[in-house]
Length: 248
Image (cartoon, rainbow, N blue to C red; front, side, top):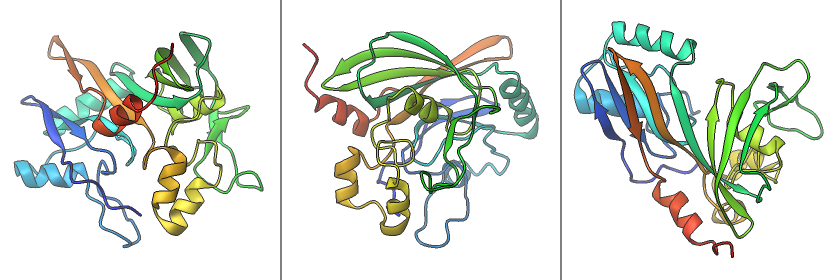
C-alpha cells in the first residue's frame, strides 16, 4: 500500500457546531485497521491533535482515495442534528469525476438499484457493487462539464448514499473513472494493488494512483441559514486533465 502524499487536511469552514475540512486523497476519514502494512493517517485523528477537541465526529465519510469536503461535528448535539440531516437527504453533495469516454449526453439521471455483485470467476473483489435486480434504490444525477481527448469531466449529484454509488453508476454507463482499481477497465487491478501495492507500472496503466473522484461542494441548512462550502479540483486531477488535448 502506498503511503499518502505530504498534503495535510485543511479547515475550509469553522463554525461553533462543526468544521468542514478538505480531506486529501489517500487519507482515511477515521482510523481503521489496516493490517499493520503501513500507517495510514486519518483526518479525524489529525483534527483531534490539531484542535484538542475530543468530541469531533464525522457524520459521513469519504473513501480513502476520494478527496474533498468532509464534515466533522464538534459536540454530541451537533452530531445528532447532522445524523438527521443526512438521514433525510437534506445535505446536498456535488462530486467531480474524471472518466474514460465521451458521452453523447450532457445531462443524465441514472435510477438503477445497486447491490453486491458477488464473488465468482468474473469478480474477485468482495466489495464490488453493480446494478443488480433487487438491489437497493440508487439515483445519481450526472452533468458533463467538458470533454477532452477521449475523457470527460463529470459533475455528479448522488440522491442516495449507496456504497461506491457514483463509481458503480459511471461504470454501468460505460464511463470508468480514471485511476479506479475496482470499477475501471482492468477488473483485477484492485487484487494486483493488494498484492504488490501502488507500483509505478500500475499507476501508468490506470492514469492516476487513485480514483479521480473529488467531493467539491456541500450544502445544508443550519440554524436558519444555508451553509455552502466548495473546494476546486485538486492538483493531481487538474494535472491529469490539463495533460489532455482539448476537444476541437
